[in-house]
Image 1 (cartoon, rainbow, N blue to C red):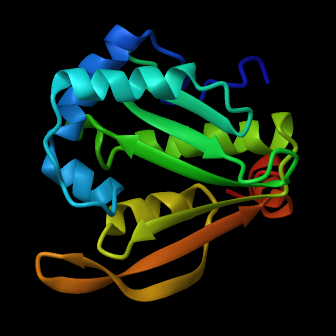
Image 2 (image 1 turned 135 degrees about the horizontal axis):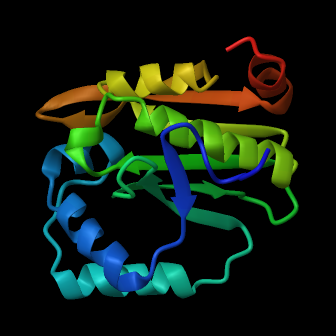
Length: 189
């Protein structure tokens, strides 16, 4: 493995605050993106507020968080973010979150590739035992992407979200290091 943070389509990076805030402002104003990635109601925030939020997140030296930006290999375009959160400092489990903010890159494998890169990092560098995630049941594109990255369904919370006046479920997925190793290191997927 020559570059731990490089996949087939993307690489994980850390961005300076000005570059990141410019993209984040645009992504957060895309209500479809927000509704796919977040359970909170869509809101409009000023550029100043978004930049302050990013500055706070980037200056937080929380050893339980590993946040990255996602850039394409082909054109070096900043298209999203991905991160791991370890609920316990010396735990072996993490939660992952991802967002592809640039619509042009939706449904083309960039998110799946980024997820594969972060899983490789989680299992080989951080020596984690499992990685979990949660998503809205209506986000079928994300569900398929997570399956391609090796995640399996583990459960659901029924009707805990409301979107467009209808109750929807939150789905939970996970992958163990042994499952990842069997599928990707030994070449099953």
